[in-house]
Amino acid sequence: MSDEETYDVIVIGAGPGGYVAAIRSAQLGQKVAIVEKRATLGGTCLNIGCIPSKALLDSSEFFARTKHEGSEHGIVSTGLELDLPAMHTRKDAVVHKLVSGVSTLMKKNKIAVHTGTAHLEEPGRVTVTAEDGSTSTISATNIIIASGSVPQELPFMPFDGSRVVSSTEALAFDSVPEKLVVVGAGAIGLELGSVWARLGAQVDVVEILPEILAGWDPQTAKSLRRELSKQGLNFHLKTKVTGVNTSKKQGVTLEAQDTDGNAVSFEADKVLVAVGRRPYAEGLRLGQAGVELEEDGTRIKIDDRFRTSASGVYAIGDVVRGPMLAHKAEDEGMAVAEIIAGSGGGHVNYDAVPNVVYTWPEVASVGHSEDALKKEGRDYRKGQFPFAANGRALAMGASAGFVKILADAHTDRVLGADILGPYASDLISEIVSVVEFGGSSEDIARTVHAHPTLPEAVREAALAVDNRSIHGA
Ligand code: FAD
Image (cartoon, rainbow, N blue to C red; front, side, top):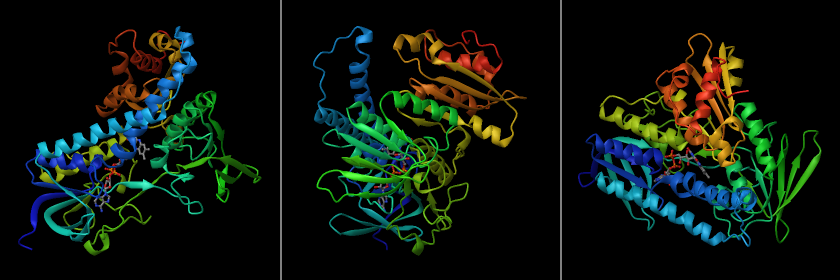
């Protein structure tokens, strides 16, 4: 054991949870190693998630807006063509730049990178198996598991990598499918469905629930569905997928049942199954180190300080409870590093974690939804303002949507917000900060906002909480 490399902290998994935990630990003076089985760092998010999907969303949006809205702006684009390989090359370059950046950050912070698959020998000891089968064992006082998640399969239609696919393959189709069926109307399904619809595919979205975006405010979800329908996405709600027939040489037939129990089928070139992601802890040999799972048998059980049931072993990110979001994983990464180093801090405010879907228009939310407040019987006031009355949105030609702010009826503290509109992902930040500070709608309403900007719609919604919106109808 004496020739084992020893560290203060070993991080397993170099996604946004793991690499951020490693950097924060190093900043706090710890000797850190990170183990990653993928050839590049950055995890799901940078390699096959957030970043490539946003690169394709931006490129396809550019294409679709030029095609459909160019003439309105006086832009004539005769002969507009799609060069899909070039679009993928650009996406790959963005990914490459960011994953290389994470490697540079590891060097800068003197973090030892071990490439290979990690498993726990016992608390404090990790064995890394490299691709060539060679192994090495490293040890540390503290281990942080940040092994992430993988796409959820439907048991009766496993991924085959070409016709029944996950988000990973849908980020890299080498031609635009004529017909794409998306199973599941959550963030990933809607984002990738939008990409391929904009590039010319006929997209059918099949969802078992009565509305898209489960867990979101129903008004926001319904409004987004209407906007996406206008862009050509066909939604089939309350429709349960029952099977898939891949016996034909080309394409697939997706079998389903509609609301009334009638059999329906969809012909497609590709079926993207986007029904969620499942925590990934395979091969970690958690049992032999005494790390317990939650009752669902998938997520690693932790307490409010990210401690697992094994001494000195912590877990964060998609592999533990809470929303599967990169920024949630990052914040947990910083918090766990601070807890381990005993530096103070070490806290994540789960009431102030924004949630975003990067369609066009985008949707973003934070805190309580109106629906949740109604169900809780909470006394709240609501202010809503449409982008159709915002000068900048009109100038951009992006006037669909609204900002909705919910505040406590007695204290005026901001409890939550929903935004459907252009750059909702950026606009939500102002409200997240106010929620974090325990601020009121009056705080936003009294803040000077530059004119003409989209954030003025946020201010108007805050003014509307007190029925004093200036530009509202
Ligand atoms: P991961 O990023 O999954 O990283 C875990 C890493 O651990 C992986 O690199 C894996 O190879 C490694 N690993 C696992 N087991 C071992 C082992 N035994 N040994 C060594 N290494 C191991 N989230 C957002 O917030 N915004 C978005 O816009 C967004 N878009 C997305 C789009 C798509 C298409 C997808 C698929 C996901 C998206 N997500 C988005 C979700 C986001 O990617 C995840 O929430 C985030 O990556 C979770 O971070 P993590 O560090 O917990 O795990």
